[in-house]
Length: 242
Image 1 (cartoon, rainbow, N blue to C red):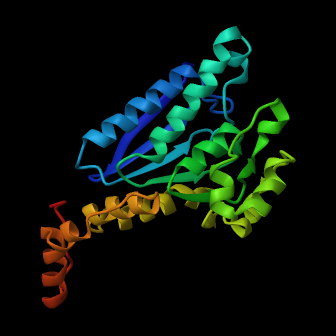
Image 2 (image 1 turned 45 degrees about the vertical axis):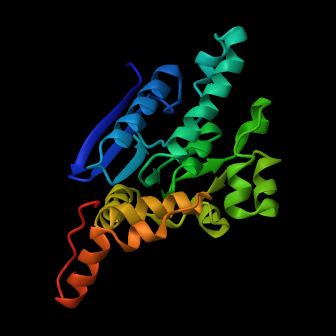
């Protein structure tokens, strides 16, 4: 079976991306290109307000395809650098990206999850900052930034796996759900975000990343005026990204 990124639209403003590369959803070069293309498509389609990213087959992502990596020879450095570029593309996606983590989330898979804006997990999720297990580094920037140096080093320096409960207590994920409830929970969260004012959501994401935002533009936006009017008339606001 060829590695595939399944792209669907469970709701008008939501894109669902599902990694499908058995047995471990390894991010080989073909799947990376598909993911990069999907992010570019989302960035260009202003009707999209949220992305949910997950994996099929009871696995989120186990990082690079090591069988493929073994055949790359001198091209392995370029592949590693290119992987980092892809993670930056996911992180700077125009809209929020929610990672729904089921099963293995290891090495580069954890880095992929950390590149997302929100992470939730299933009860059987198993995570690891496993770069040191294969003679590499992974998550050395994003994990300390998310949970602090002390907690991050306990993961980064040992490469030991940890379960969903530890991920929740350490702040790697924000919620843990039964397996069958994981994707519905991710889509419910996506729907909530999709019904907020999209210009404000996008600006908030950029501001958290350190960008200087034009508050005056939001104050003067049609969406803000719509929110005030909806409040005054006791109805739900209808935001149009304007």
